[in-house]
Length: 468
Ligand code: ARG
Image (cartoon, rainbow, N blue to C red):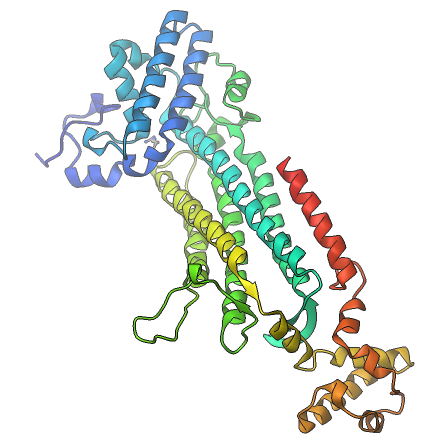
């Protein structure tokens, strides 16, 4: 005999031998799916009601099963972790086993007409529904942090980059609202995914549908689902809803990694645009002067893990024949881990953004440096009838002259500028100021302080209405 305990409690009938110990460890999912114990019980209670409605359970039996399941739920809530000593295969088996312990043979009626295939899918959907709502709450909190920065620094200038080269000045408010916009889209994507998560597979049986005259619409609404899933063969093994949720998590993690990178760079001694607080940085064991942006580096690093979970589920689903296959048991590890990690990243990002200070003087100085106003000179010439391509060339020459002189554009004397192009006059200095550069970008979505004011008010209203 190859070791092992007893044949699976739920399916031992046709087996002579118990599973090998090693295989049992390989096969059991209780350590992971334990997290869905409350969902499994909720689904079971709703199922018992339907069994009563079709006459499988009497009123009294249904009531006893419901009470029994509620008792199991209370017991489960007191356990510190998965009850591995039970030796049971998965959370569904555990719940049923506990019920039978309490009710004897009556507990054995619960699994009538259902399968673990429709049950597990229902449990994951219930779990994912809550998970989406929680991640959206955390997203809202991070958006709030960016809106606070936008309020504090609506009009303060900072440099903005393309290719990590100083490009044009923007306001800090505009920068903060850029991240708020990404997170708002992630939140909207989650809401859209929720619509497809919110379907009830229970009553689809193993794959062909249940043989009992269950009212699946009533069952779905009892569990708060928008509708029952429409094809039992599909529903028994569909995990798109989790795939889609993980895709949004991955996109959100990518946004957070961009934020982390911005902040790491801005916090570096070379840029010094922001100062991270001691509360989210660490020291070096060797170099006493160091203050390392570990919180941000971990956010950046965990992006790989979260995006990896999406790739993991995608590959898990690839080429699975209809319908349920045990491969699907691997879905939960990916989903749970990505959700936990994203939750941490979002909450840490709030802590970082709430405690970071901007060095306003340095931001202003860097916004004016690096010839970020070269575009203004070109636009100035355009206003004087010079075609843009020529104006661009002239402004480029002016930058070269200024570079050689080690001066910003606006420090070049008028004669020097006129030597480059005769259309340049004394009023050019007005357009080369930081304030002029910012306030000119007044078209919708631009960084002009008046637009930033509008945008942050709109973003606040949108966030408030989403939360209502
Ligand atoms: N533990 C399984 C899972 O997570 C439950 C479904 C088992 N179904 C089956 N036909 N073996 O997928």
